[in-house]
Length: 115
Length: 112
Image (cartoon, rainbow over all chains, first blue to last red; front, side, top):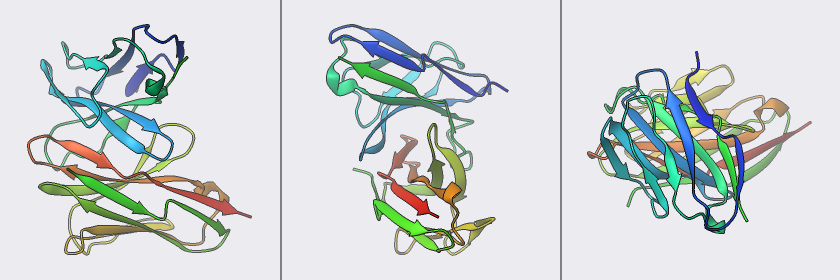
C-alpha cells in the first residue's frame, strides 16, 4: 500500500524561486492537508481540503498556494521561496471529515531549504 | 483561536522510569484528541480519545482524556531507549473547519 506519498524528499531552493511539493494518496481520502514543522513550533497547518475542488487556509497560509483538482492529489506551491519557508513539510490525509474518522495518515515529509 | 499546550517541552529519564506527558487544549467544538509519536520521520498514530475517563492502552503506553479539565495525559511505564521521541498531542475541532491543531510536542529522551 502506497498510502500518502510526498515528493521530493529533499530540496534546496534559491530565494525567489518557485516550486511545487507533490502529495498523492491512494486511499480515496476526502480530507488532505499540508503542515510545516519547525523546531519548537510543532506542526502548523498551512492549507487543507475537504474534497476535490475545495480548499481552505490553515494557520500559516501566506506564501503558499494549493489546489485539489482530483481526490488523489494535493500539491503545495511555493510562489516565491523565502528563507523563512525553510522547514519540513508534511502532507496528511484522512478518510472523511466526520469526527469518527480521525486517523490521520502522514507522508514521510519533505525537507526544504531556501538559501 | 484554537490552542494546544503540551508540557513539559522536554524530559530526560532513565530506562525503567515511568513518565507522564501532559496536554491541555482550547478548541472550538472539540471532537477528539490524538496522540502521536514522532521519531525521525512522520508522526505515527498512538491513540484517539473522544470520551472522558476511558483509558486507552497499548502495551506500556496509556492515555486518558478529561473533558472537564480540557486535558489529556500520556503515560509510559518501564521506559526503554526506543521510547525516545517527540510526542505530539493534537485536538480535532469539528467547528466546520475540520482542523487538527497540534501542540509543540514533548521531546522525551530515555537514557540507559
